[in-house]
Length: 342
Image 1: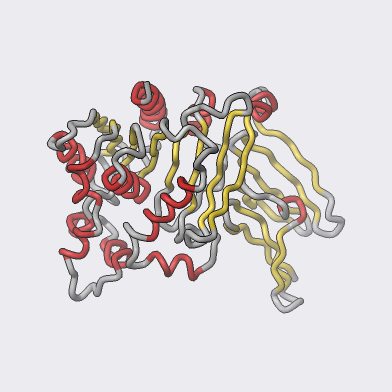
Image 2: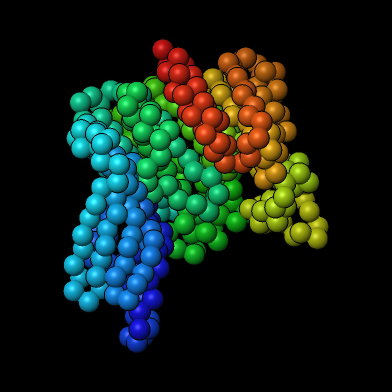
């Protein structure tokens, strides 16, 4: 008998076949074996037939029907009226592996026509999540508006082994920040280092705060969604206080508020020079609006007086994924970033 599962594998999501009759051997199905990025997801299984969905940034969605007995696979493009063939021909994707940085990996999506373009550095949230370069309308918008994308999977991202997840416990603000810097440093001479913008939400916003505060000359701008800026106060606000205890590796029966605060981006706010755009979901119970608002006011008081704007979205929570909010923040982000690099 066989069990089928989809699971993150480094910077991609693949479909795996688990043979229960053969010592539980695990192998990826042939059609996704060589995939380095993108998301394969099981939709349905009937007898020997498997229906799967693939999401790719440059190619959108496709459906594949795979027969386990014959290993035959058929493919269909979803939404074929959109010019994905033309779009995919405009860009190329490169996997950047940085073993020294807790086996970090980055996905670099760039224009084929010009190497001197500005770049959006994307840091995912979680922190135990992964950027697999699946389709995301906001990211495609940046590409079509002339930007390159550099998506970092720092140590602690899913798909790189349980030991990497455990390593991040108690080392947030150190390991993850250092991994991001190592990935960025690996690109010296390969991009326009004078036109970088950081983009992140939740823990990605936490990292954006640390990176712009501790490396103030590195980024021209930051686009931040519902960020964690003060772990100490978040511990008493969030609907998952166990998260604040876990990432700081603190005894939940003896909470060390001073340690939580010392690991927070808010202490670095006075040094920020990057123009900053904040998107806040007013119904967010995971990271309350007070977190983003505290960053806004801290930057307003910062010595460098960076440009800072905050947009609050009613009836939107942590993901900021309402139809209006997601589109509005994406468009405003592109405009804000473009103005910041001029």
